[in-house]
Image 1: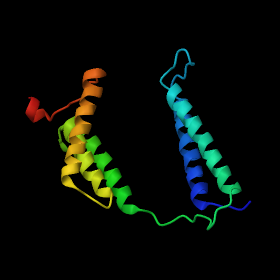
Image 2: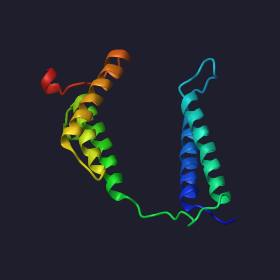
Image 3: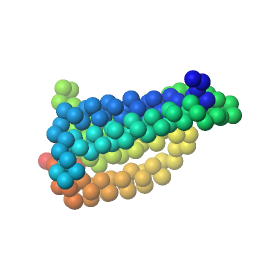
Image 4: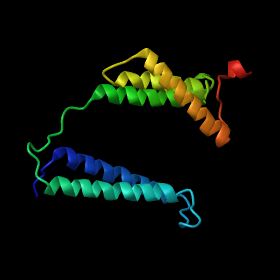
Length: 162
């Protein structure tokens, strides 16, 4: 069979692989049923839906004719590096690194670091806009996770809160 759109073909395969991985990982948790969902129910459902979506996209790439075959371009390494670095910084700042005695800096510092680092992934960087975005995200996350959901993790660095 001839691939008519490389972009759709490989993105469909990626969706299927990630969906199957999530669905398979969810089977190690209690699934439950629709009336009494277990912790594995939602990831299993999302994994199956993602795998089905990947199958549809892959099938479409083999059937629907495209003008130039939609070749896969070069990897955009800059966005990949900055997005991964931002997420790593968020995780490290949120929980700290006990192995090197780095204390947890909290949710707010993590969100600011994530936003500032990830904003470098794009072509434009406006510090004022990024700081406004980080502030809005910090307020929303504080309200959602700390106030509404009552999650217990540090909001501020330990040297500030004592």
